[in-house]
Image 1 (cartoon, rainbow, N blue to C red):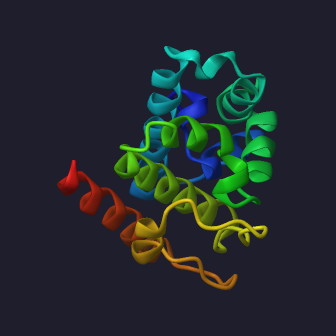
Image 2: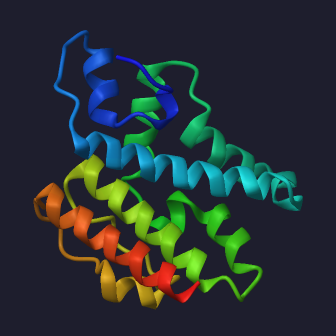
Length: 169
């Protein structure tokens, strides 16, 4: 297996961790693209004062700073058990401080939901009493009761979020 672990699909990392093999598929590549998108947004934020926040740094490290494959897999499962309001709270706060970047906020929320669904094969967790940070993305990638979801359905929702908000940019 080749590639940068922090961008690899979790299923590929899991099989490496368990010393097994798996066929690399296009679904794994799509998941990797989602990680690269989030990573690039976090890295852009690092050039600002957002990185002065301890919570922001911890959030980034949880996603991309695990020293081993086992810890990276475990961190991902922990992150994606949460709704985006908790899992990427500091990134959303950073994006939403501008108030004009609702498009980026929608893309980030949609990307998180896509990755959460991949990790649990369930919809992202409940809102924990908060309003949805992004009602626009709710129309394209709605939160549903937990249920198994085929990859193609999850991918279509995420693709719709990216496509719609790209056309508004």
